[in-house]
Image 1 (cartoon, one colour):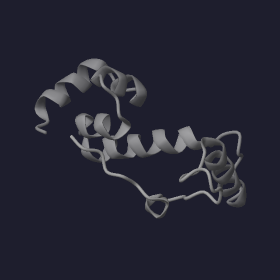
Image 2 (cartoon, one colour):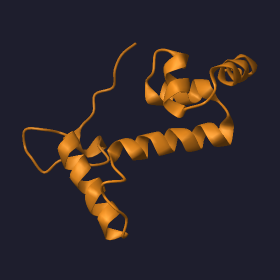
Image 3 (cartoon, rainbow, N blue to C red):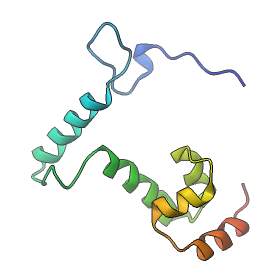
Length: 101
């Protein structure tokens, strides 16, 4: 499988630095902190990982499709996704068996 080549304009958050095409994780964290602070929330309670986990949890809650969430998170093992979402393993495996991909 061939990977697509990305240009700096392909990134949602391109960097202003010349030696990189995309934001660093630190730059992204600063942006998230600024957003959280701007809307009056405690920045120690919300961060980049919170956004990732929340998005995955919402997708799972709406679709009950563990496999889709697993793919979106880039997990190789379904058990990792189950643990990440904090759901019961038996329930998760039963739902996964019922879900066609």
